[in-house]
Length: 370
Image (cartoon, rainbow, N blue to C red; front, side, top):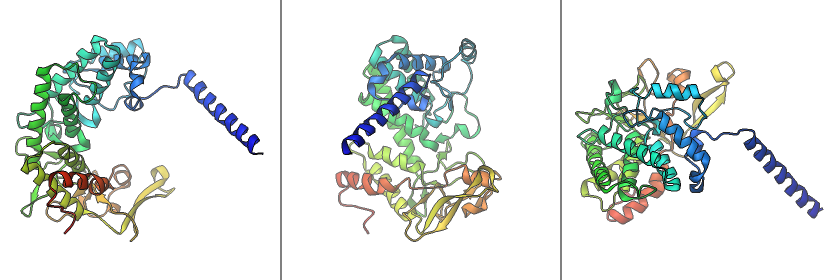
């Protein structure tokens, strides 16, 4: 019986594999998000080259890329002509991982295939990122000619940190960036140093203590700044995690960097929310048939709010009306379910990253043990 079961098991695996292969042959297409997660060998394939050629079409004259597009989707001749006509659009951005992700993809394909057009496009993107940086070290969300909150120094969704990680890897020759010339690598290294200075200036001081960061800061004063109606001036329990992780990656950190990290970690530890659990509940009366609710649960792991009121450290929530509330249930269903208001963002930072960093760079002071 065991032999028969084993044979049947193998047969089922073969059928499943065959079905998957058939699906691939029928035109199963990787999305852009899937493409960037492929293993190194894939970037040498003709399919990777096809996607890279798509990226050349999407690249704007500024050197950057727009966001929220499936750039891996096959393009018709008309779509290619339309993209050529859109080259001068002013929608290049670093939001939602745009531009630096395309550059990394092109660098990987170039490393595998050595086709010069991909190298040249990547270098144009690098020049764009270096030019977009403010003299004070920050990056706006859009460039050139950003308007409104798009001009703010943008940590939201890890925009500026994503750029700085890319530039740091490039300057260190980590990853597939050996083709970048020494002059550009030096400019990238300088840009990262200026970016770190900007981060330190943006860290919010409340009650005489350094805390964390807002999701965006004024590009001239470094003060916390608002964005969309429901993104108020606040302390971010999400974006600040990426900032601290980046600072922890600095070799031989200066005393001011160490202090920034220690202060932020202490704030995270104090800002944890306990005794509640966020759950999705079926509710046929609501759009989508579900609601997001907060329930009391003494056994639940800690959560952090996306936004905290500066000075009180109270979690805040806001709908499209722009009015701050202090409970998730008080904002409209669309925003309640359509935004990440609670999360465990700092949990691994506190449990894993900080102990390793602290033991190496500031062994005499552990802010989690008081």
